[in-house]
Amino acid sequence: MTQQQEPTIHVPDPLQVSNTVASIASKSQRLVQNFLARQTADGTLNIENSLHIGTAFLEMTQKMLADPVKLAQTQFALWQDYAQLWQKSAAAFFGQQVEPVISPERSDRRFQHDAWKDNYFFDFIKQSYLLTARWLQSTVREVEGLDKKTQKKLEFYTRQFIDALAPTNFPITNPEVLRATLESGGENLLKGLHNLLSDLERGKGKLSIRTTDLAGFTPGVNVAATPGKVIYQNELFQLIQYTPTTEQVFRKPLLVVPPWINKFYILDLRPKNSFIKWWIEQGFTVFVISWINPDARLAEKTFEDYLVEGALTALDIIEQATDERQVNAVGYCLGGTLLACTAAYLTAKNDDDRLSSCTFITTMLDFSAPGELEVFIDEEQLTSLEKRMSQRGYLEGNEMAATFSMLRANDLIWSFFISNYLLGKEPFPFDLLYWNSDSTRMPAKMHSFYLRNMYQKNRLREPGGITLAGEPIDLRKVTTPGYFLATIEDHIAPWKTVYAGTQLFSGPVRFVLSGSGHIAGVINPPAKNKYCYWINSAIPKTPERWFGGAEQQQGSWWVDWLQWAQQYAGDATLARLPGTGKMDVLEDAPGSYVLTKCTSENNS
Image 1 (cartoon, rainbow, N blue to C red):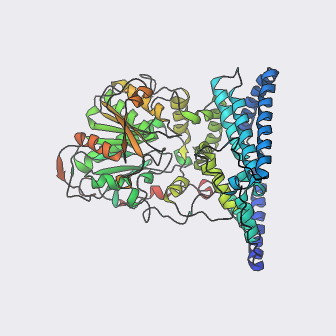
Image 2: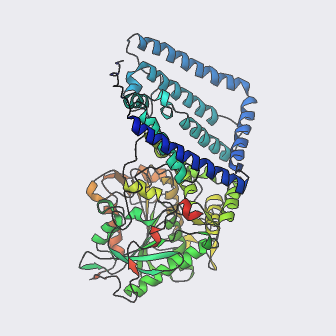
């Protein structure tokens, strides 16, 4: 293996080091004071979740010890792998070309630095870690006698443990960090400590890792900047009507129901990737719900309130603004779940002609296989979560953000840990990560209902399984045409689970599978000609059969959706300006609700 060029050792500026150390000392003092103040006020630490996880691992250990022969076999297999690694590493040390015992997955970006393959020492560390990780995962996976949910929980937290102990996460075993330390005279570590303390201070003692330049974007300026007006608001949402850019539009308006777990402007980041802007350019009169970032005053708001005061009210306001009773509706993620409930409610009220079509983007309606999020939905963890929410009246935005980050820990946690704290770099501006960090809270009662009735008990798929506003919800009675979009790498709404929703409706259904994941696979403008998508006009009972007959198409699924949606959009009419109907303009888009930050200062 070739050796790396020796790094140039740099002597740091004493004044800069002095200033950095002084800042570190000041931040450390404030953090200690804040920590002691919290312990004095509270006096307790929340360790319930840790106990539940510990119980699962204790049960696993008991099962393993009950079969010592199998345990010995797995350990012997690991020793054999190590022996082979030692043999090949010794040969590499003496200049021989050898094939690695184990290599990272192609999607694993942690070991991209040349030293991980060119330097036999770091190559040995890398392969030792990968062998141990594989052994741990397979050992946990093959333990017999555990129930399915416990098994999933163990595999998930084992992966978290393995990811945390990667050699890339430690200065002494990361060649990129070692080189940066030598070249900067340790300035990277000082800057990294400064960044770490700043993030702890910003999170009021909880580590809140910056993934982007938080000052680099401002909603209404360089994100969420598509022109429009707020024409209505209540306690739960503002309704935005966007300014048309075509002389004529489709007669039936388009209502967008985004998830309340994040802010709506994932659909309107910047002009080049704004779904909202694209819809407007195709000739739709676009209305978007901008949910409130709730606090304790809305603790009693329920899922039913989000239906009645949210989606149903939005339909009424659109009718007043445009004199059109029928709309095409698009629901994204949880917004799609609410949209499905809205369609079923309107059907129960014999009012289903209000919706000309429904589009469900990465939406789960049958929660029988919700993916790794199921790890967090057992009775003990839900009870613990409800206890914490009842004390505040809402779920903290950063708690849900942390949950989603754990699903992709190497990309969303450890990569920034290395960059920010070990390399001492400042995050660069990235619109998607800015949106991702702009988290929202959720009312306690609404969120508890959603987790228990959808995720835990899967009642939405059952006819009459839940009742909203006095009406049993039965998706099987819905005849409104539906378009389902799933993404093949989705870790939040697995595509096969999204597909299961197609079996719940009585009306015509189209299912399309996009490349990439929950966000990138959705926000994929045609101009980029990126990724691909699969189409199949048939809707068989299983996703495997659907995929077996699907055809791959290059580019964006938006084009396919437009061709489908046009048949339900109505004839052409003159473009409608916000405020020219029966609803007055309240303020410019994106409105004031989206500007409410979910910071520790707001939450206190």
